[in-house]
Amino acid sequence: MCGICGEIFFNRQPIYEDSVIRMNQAMARRGPDNEDIYHGIWTLMGHRRLKIIDLSDHSNQPFIDPKLGLIIVFNGAIYNYKTLKEELYQKGYTFHTTGDTEVILKAFHAWGEDCVQHFNGMFAFAIYDQNKDRVFMARDRLGIKPFYFYKKDNSLLFASSLPALLATGKIKKQISSQALHYYLTFHSVVPAPHTLISGIEKLPPATWAFVTQEGTMTKKTYWQPMYLRDKEEENYTFDDWKQLVTKSLMDAVKRRLVADVPVGVLLSGGLDSSLVVGLLAEAGQKDLKTFSIGFESVGDEKGDEFLYSDIIARHFATDHNKIQVDANQVLPSMPDCVSAMSEPMVSHDCIGFYLLSREVARHVKVVQSGQGADEIFGGYHWYPPMMQSTDPVADYRSVFGDRSHEEYLEMVTEAFQKEDYSTQFIREHFDMEGADTAIDKTLRLDTMVMLTEDPVKRVDNMTMAASLEARVPFLDHELVELVAKIPAEHKVGSGGKHILKEAARSVIPNEVIDRPKGYFPVPALKYLKGEYLDFVTDILNTDAARDRNIFNRGYIDRLLADPESHITPLKGSKLWQAALLEYWCQQQDI
Image (cartoon, rainbow, N blue to C red):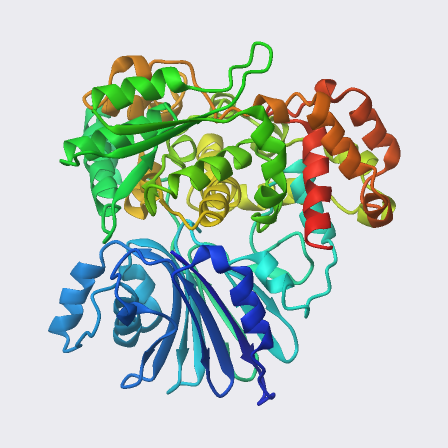
């Protein structure tokens, strides 16, 4: 796990290292073990390394292969790199390291852009091909690893984080009206290629791109799961699908043990992370380190799920670490937590993951996490209504959106009052081929967009802030391909994740499987009172907030007057959503 950055200069412009130096400095916590810069004729590339695979300095980056004329900066992990290495040996390639970085480089030389089809893992990388005088960029299928870029007339900047790009001082910090609409109406999800800052883009998941010295950029989507079954699969029984899921998930968990350092697990006490622990135990892992976090309760809303995480820790005899967070730790940690966000993320559990990661990093450098199961296995409460939907776009918008377009227009000032981008985006995504029913269209959108831009980004940003690598077995692309084909009723039925729950019964205790669904609870950020309300009030009443003039003051004043009455359909605080956006803008000097 690392941080990558670079600047590609077009049309023989003179090149300067200052931007890459600044970006590398801004990403120090993504890779504290080594940093370096490659200085080419028209390409500069920087790297921050967190040593996980091949702990020697031989795999430091930028990694240069002078014989092949290739230079790479890479963030992520290729879990099948040893198998690919053997395949490349047979093709005549030789290797000088024991890591996965060199395997990517040789794979690109052997297969060109099709190399990405061979990789099982999470990755974002850039390769400078000296012989063909172009740069190849790619991002993994589910967008687990980030890739931001900013293209102007004379150069292209890229980095693993958006704040790193802003640190160059070369980008006008202007809010995108389209992205703002997504943020405030689409549950803070800003789909690629958009970001909150005009001109800064995200390379979409499952996308590669070539950039030439003349400044042309060519992109292609190389993968998409199909929510359709062939004739043979139409005859599969529930048990057939369950057996396939069990095997595929075990394979995914085993793959993510590939490391030259110990691998732990973030154990929330829910089905998903508990199942990861159980499968690791079945795979023979001993003395597995697990980590849980809890917050103070607010009223009737409990702030921890230790009851269930304790059951799993005892059952599998893990080396369990419970982290109880005093409420006094949350607000003092908020500035650093928000500064670690590449884009503002409204989910309350960002601070939970931040504090948990900070503690976990004292014990291990790699963890597995249960993110993604709800999206691919149909675990959220808005899925059952979509099973019978006759107006999928409107129905999905109503259950997932934080506010209507009309309320959005009431919330923002005239400069940001544009069209209903979120509804338009949902309609276009639902119209894509590969999913026929309303529920499958919904599951596909959540897997390919919402998952990437909310839970996955949250885990990457918060763990990387502590120099911790997180791996997500539920986002193994082979598992995602399989689960996409499973009939929706097998997933959404019986309160959600039906087939996953049944597959889990042979692995973990039923009392964890049949428990009420829980979330990573941080009640104080949902029901804003006392010092938390004072905190957001101060943010929204600063001169900077008034000068930025994003929000209509009358709307904000109503939220401040009675924050507990303004909760989104997904049970989030509308006031926290507005305050977080403003606070992020203040930290990034937007």
